[in-house]
Amino acid sequence: MTNTTNTAPDVSAPGFVEIKEKVMAVCGASSMGVAKKQEVRDLLEDLHNLYTGCQEGLVKAQGRLISLLEDHSALKDDLSKAKAAATPPPSDYGNSLLTRPSPRDTCKDGALIWLTGGDISPSDKSTERRIQIVTKVGKKAETVVTDSFFAKDDRLGIRVSDGDRVRASEAAKDLGYQAKVLGSVDPELFIREVGEITEQELRNSIGDSCTSVYKKGLNAFVRVRRDSVEGILTAGVKVGWRLLKPELRHRKVMCYNCCAIGREAHLARACSRDPVCYKCGVKGHDGRSCPGGPPRCANCQGPHNATDHRVCPTVRGLVMRDLGPLAKLY
Image 1 (cartoon, rainbow, N blue to C red):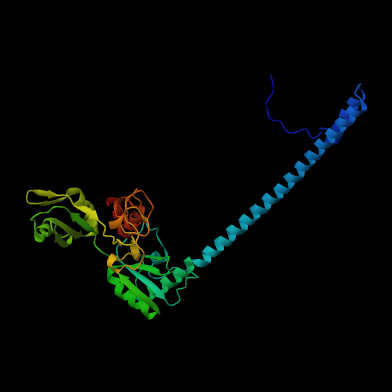
Image 2: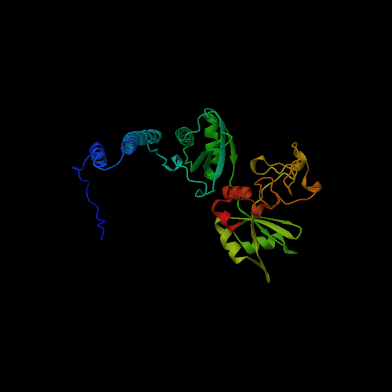
């Protein structure tokens, strides 16, 4: 039976040169011809060169690995120092303005203020720079900035409570920035085929959580407080003997000429761009004059019309941004 137990190498084992000489001694004692002996010697020499080359390569690789590990350790130290330098001391109004939650975790309550100009530069969108600007505005306004981020177009967005938006906006202007305030909007519910039910009846049935009602034709659009949305969607709206089932609505304007959506969206009558079909996604004609073909979204390139917002990942991203945690109900 073969013993497979791992044992330490025998340090007294002969070296390669000694083994080669022993092999040649065996060859010399045999009836092997001179040519064959020389062939064996050459093969052993080639094997020795190969073995030596492998050892040299291994030594070089070990040296390279050690160098990489040293560089990695130095980089970690530099990153730790940079992170420590970028973290300002705690302020009197809390650490919440210094942190930036991820978009999926951030509550969208409050007012969003877009800042431009001043010392905001597209060449420096670092976390340290963002914190410096947010800290200045927060201290000037004596308010808490709950979120902050740089947009792709180099604007700096800060979010404050609705009650602090005027004070924060004025503070930013005093510091030399241009400020544009976007207030928070109550979520909108869409109710189909309400028929002769009046706006006041809908308001009375929903109760205090209803902030506005607008009826158009047989349908109604209702805005409610954010904390009551899920309950209303689950229970429905009972008016008399009827139980209405509202849907969470997310109005997203899209140009029906060029299919632009999101912040670049505009009405088709004001569009100066070349047409893009909202059915097949091909440039050069609009959806009304589409010659046919497989559907293709002009925004996400998916196999659907650009108007099918509920299946479009591009629109889904906008819904996540605007509705926050409520997007799961959309």
